[in-house]
Amino acid sequence: MGIGLALVAGIGLAAGPAFPASAAQEAIKIGQSSVYSGPASAFSTIPRLQAAYVRMLNQQGGIGGKAIEFISLDDAFTPAKAVENTRKLVEGDGVLFMFSYFGSSQGLATRKYLNSKGIPQLFVSSGAAAFGDYKEFPWTIGWPPTIVSEGRAVGTYIAENLKGQKIGILSENAEYGRDYIRGLKQSLGPAAADIVREMTYEVGDPTIDSQIISLKAADVSVLVDISTPKYAAQAIRKLDSLGWKPAHFIYSASASIGATITPVGADKAVGVMSATFFKDPNDPQWAGDPALKAWTHFMETYFPEGDRREIYNVISYLQGETLKKVLEQCDGDFSRANIMKQATNLDFQPGMLLPGIRIKTAPDDYYPIEQLQMTRFDGTRFVPFGGLISGK
Image (tube, rainbow, N blue to C red; front, side, top):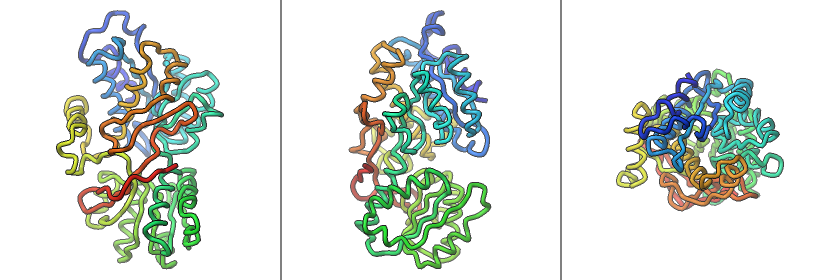
């Protein structure tokens, strides 16, 4: 499945201008290992949209007259397969760099290998703070706000607006959960003493009902829920069945109407809060926004099978814009060193980011997005409220 998609995104079948016969040899060859099948296949919209974005760039003439060959392989969300794919793409296909691994484990499993060979590992789709370690791994850079940053943003909001209330935490027993909690406690400061109970669950647990019951029993009035969509939906459903209405914060990766809200019922999720950094296409306040119009045109023209309600189709589009910016800044020098140099010297605002949020990197700052805004679900959409909060 991944190979077929790569061919569509590559030179041979790209719509638009006819590149010269030598295009395959001169192409900007980009590799990707991402998720198309397996337990996280719902996220396959991310690499599919990115392939569509490359097709659009090729139709528009490529970058500097050069075609882009995008080879995206399925790793089924498994680190071992990501390693296998990466070696094939580097040693067999000769890609210039790797783009947008999905998942912390996949990015971490391949990081040492890519850095040992001086191959850029650009814009890993993971909020793990580890992907900003420019000293130890100078060829690897993340893209979204780190999970530590998100925890700090939520902690700042709680400390300023819900002071003195009992706080409970539910998280997956995984690195991302620990990162979030670390940032949360940093920003809570003295208010961290208000945390009265911390509960975890394991991937594969059938439910988190017992954890929710335990948190309610602790008289928690602020619930920070750092769980993936399946378990976030379960938490919302259980809170509703218990008639329990704490201030409920969910992990941004779960603030998806398609993946979390619809399965449980929008009426049960009213009031749920999260943090975000991009424009929600479901929000009518952006109806006349030029950036949303451009995104909608892209979806209609190049990715009509994509769900326009799905936030991951905005996130992956923004990553595509970031990739385009890097390649344009290369100004024809597509050496690996210059690609990495440009990726770590960005300062621009793609239209689908919230106003005031920019993508900024530097040789000593590998965290492209470091501001977030709180949002609250109103029964139809997540509505931004308050000002921007720095995750630094």
